[in-house]
Length: 247
Image: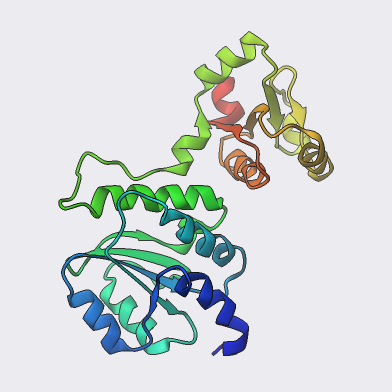
């Protein structure tokens, strides 16, 4: 159990924005029994994920459609409540921080820790807002899509080739290892190590258009998210990476 004085500011980030604390198993049962829509946030001290979760969740409340009730329990301190919630969330492994959107006693959307880690506050807010739009109206809007930050951050090799051919100042960043780059790279691409990344953060304009690539497209997603967290607005990860570019 964490020291309550230490976690009080973390609790208040949510309670000061309309969340009601649930500290007992009975409180969770009452929440799950109610009709209508609710959001339950499992709050946490867990480093970067929690540091994104709380402000992202608060930012998501700036939306035209919202859950009717907002609840929160703190992992590690509200033990009975969190354990009861996890029993109610059938099919979802224990995860904190996390956010469960509930409609008429059923979990209709779950944001787990692995959805939060590596995301920006803005992306998490967009995920939750899209879930509210889909599930929190008078009826479920089956046509609404949940925002996928992975899709939003990627660019196809055909689209990237067109931008490369235009030569309109689009920067290509190669985040592969030096031994991978030795086998070939996209013409004009800048190899990025830790020192180069810091130079970009310090000196490049945040509205510069950037395409990041690795060998197969996974590391470049993480790199693009890293730069997004520093305010870069027009950054994409090359889907399929250099392997797709050369196929």
